[in-house]
Length: 284
Ligand SMILES: [Zn+2]
Image (cartoon, rainbow, N blue to C red; front, side, top):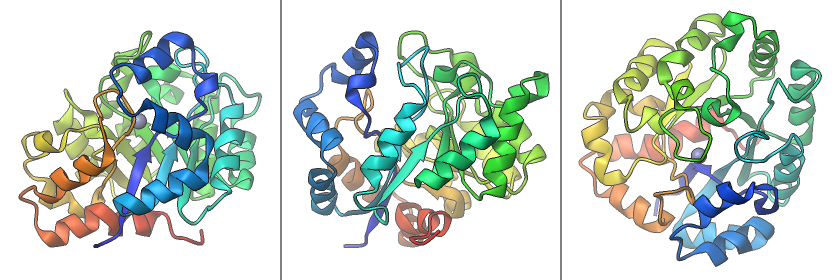
């Protein structure tokens, strides 16, 4: 079987969640015991990845004291976790410019910790991804340092149902400015703006040379309806599941359904592996 890179999995410190946010993660999950086990044991998680054919996984964490409960120490937690096998576990951390004294210096601190990429979650961090254009200076400092350090930035796009989420900030088009102002920064639009703004995501990926998207959180059976022209951007789409997010029951079934879609074998290979392997070389 061809190896897979799942660029969007949430292995998170469950003890740092606010109770109502954790409730949403637990709600209706038959596999919550596994979520708990994998979150505390990277060796068990790697074994699971072997079973489902995933070679490497992007493990997404972000600072969101207001909505989810995570402080800046979430970065140290995921860096420690991924240190177990950094060639397979790709740590995604985050800099929330309101909760660190120097956003640029924090990017360098994270890079030195082994964090491979940054996550920006506008709906949970309560700022627009282009807020630097309205005077939020430290956000520009963060993007500048990430660009210089060649750290990709993943931006959540699309609605969120977590209590307190601000969906106005989740619109892909707000990330258009990043392609203009930081043209060498690799930007990954998580979730392709689903379920409301797919055309915006498609436009941005085509417009900006370093803008990509992942298909995580999109039920595979909806993918062709959401992105009927996905073959045209097959060089810039990354496979991801968003497991164990709300509405993502399991990884294995997600992969099987993706493989069954009417997408050419060549494009599937790019989406399942090649594009992410290019952006995240084993030795950065
Ligand atoms: Zn996610």
